[in-house]
Length: 202
Image 1 (tube, rainbow, N blue to C red):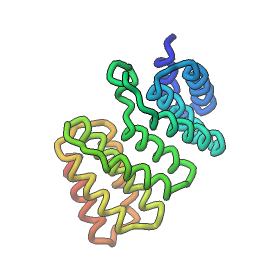
Image 2 (cartoon, rainbow, N blue to C red; image 1 turned 135 degrees about the vertical axis):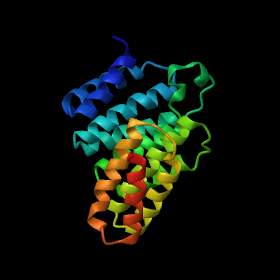
Image 3 (cartoon, helix red, strand yellow; image 1 turned 180 degrees about the horizontal axis):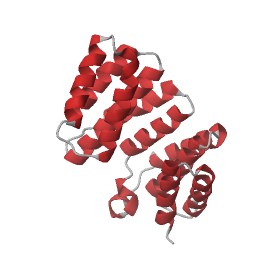
């Protein structure tokens, strides 16, 4: 089995809640990455392990490998376009790192990383889909910070960006937003977001 398959399995294990397995697969990827001259692949493997560790509530390990992934993603590489890891851009790294940080409660750093992703130029439909997902996540982070107005403004931008996009992840983000808004049923802005969200569903 290729190392790319290991990393894919690690991501699936995270999604399915198999935390110990995800960490072990992530560690195997990182070990393999130590012998590579491919900074983006190394950054991807390190971030995969960091995400698995964050899901496993291991803050020390997650922080260590987030720092290593940041070092790797910042290295110049002349061959990125020819690598399978060329898709792993600094923007994608910023998004994944932000979500890992949010999982163990470092909300300020999570918001900073998500803003870094949104600072990039985004034009294509696929990148607009990713931007929508990042905005949805950023809204959730702001709500957890107690910034209700900021969360609602961000979710409004999320709905603008998601218009016309068919995506399982966007629909999941939409459902997450609507559930979180239920506790603010008396707030006009929340009611407007709920109504806009309902139109997406139908």
